Length: 275
Image (tube, rainbow, N blue to C red; front, side, top):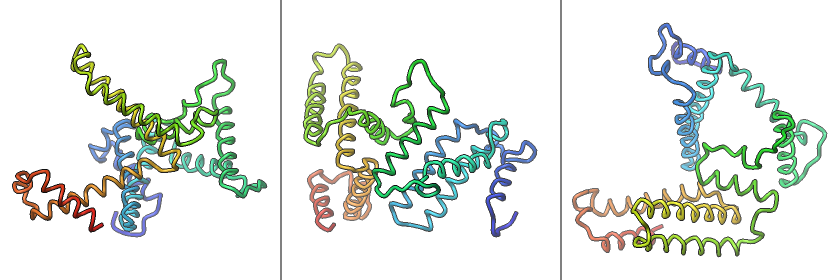
């Protein structure tokens, strides 16, 4: 093949050839669903990164990489006679039409809240039809994917529990809980003598730190803040300010290592002021 105006069928053909036992790519032939999953996640993050940077040429490329991941999984499924790419397309089209009766049907909905409520009712009905009547009802939290980032999954879990009233009505109790969890973490950090081993102490620190992060995610939910996006912004801000410090030392690592924390703090404050 040469450069040209490629279509989706060309991408499917390229993927099939990469997985062809006769002349395909040795690396691609070794892969399976589990080994490829991490790349699928990475590509999704690179799409988000391009959006955050406002770089739309990169976004076009990254969306292509993400599409390739869909094609990749569909090709492996085809080889195992599970489903094909066209089945993926068919399912998502049917789902979108089914979940938007206010667009493709006779429903009349005018508010975001009404649309979200209908969406959840349709999802619940779909799940009931898939699994049928069960003697033991499944948990409300069962369908929150474990593979999500921890902060995003925390938000999803909390939203599910909130639907049945397991939630603080205002942000005040959330703040109080954060203060409580922070105090518990401090206590564990200073409790080295009481613990029978360093491993036990570290285990408790990890647990209490996790509790603190979980409540911080809850605060983000109450404030309608995406914690992943907020943390990405904080990361970028840190990178910019640290780059200012590096620039002040002409990117000389040895000079940077010899600098005092006080010197670097002053430069950090300068970077904040310039922002």
